[in-house]
Image 1 (cartoon, rainbow, N blue to C red):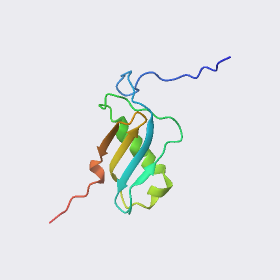
Image 2 (tube, rainbow, N blue to C red):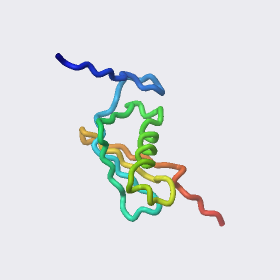
Image 3 (cartoon, one colour):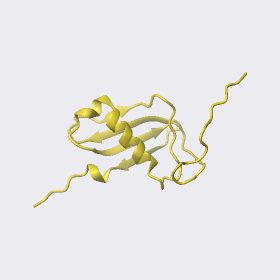
Length: 103
């Protein structure tokens, strides 16, 4: 007998029903880190395919907050690269991670 696992089939923010391929790795750059940090998801993660609801930004922010190697960073993450299982990728920039110079 097959076990049925309930799966949410639409985005909780925008209601869209199309999702990306599974995420293979998230690479994050931040102030205070010498190198970019690769984060490999433990579970299968997918993003809303519209890109309008901010799902990618929320996913990177949550992963950055809990990852042990990013705890030594000085501030927020500034750039992230999400690589999907199908070979495609997406680059995200975090405006809150950018610092403004005051003269």
